[in-house]
Image (cartoon, rainbow, N blue to C red; front, side, top):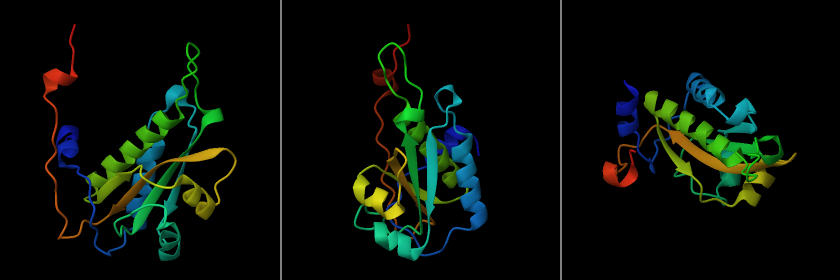
Length: 167
């Protein structure tokens, strides 16, 4: 599938079957995240794979995973990220988001559904996953096989001319 078709096919999935995702698929999704570009290639990110029922249950009070059998937590460490010298902007959240996007697109390529989750309680996630050493939870990505009852909401996009200025 070409990239634009893949992007058009991808949608937020909020209903998953209970079928487990194979280790081969998990490895490909993680590899896609690792291949993602980061500012100055500093790679200030870490990917945590959450797939055990016990771990998912432990985290369920922090976010709605829509019963996905697999969740990736994408972390970043601000002091390892690139800092823009002109204004001090730090690339940690941008880098983690690019990683998340690459993983989400690979999941789609593999025929899996996903939903990018930013509405979560970071303290619960950090404590449950025993995250320390300056890493912050930036994004969660729920992944799995889409349930047949899942509803695809048509994407509403602004007109191209309202988003692009060509000079």
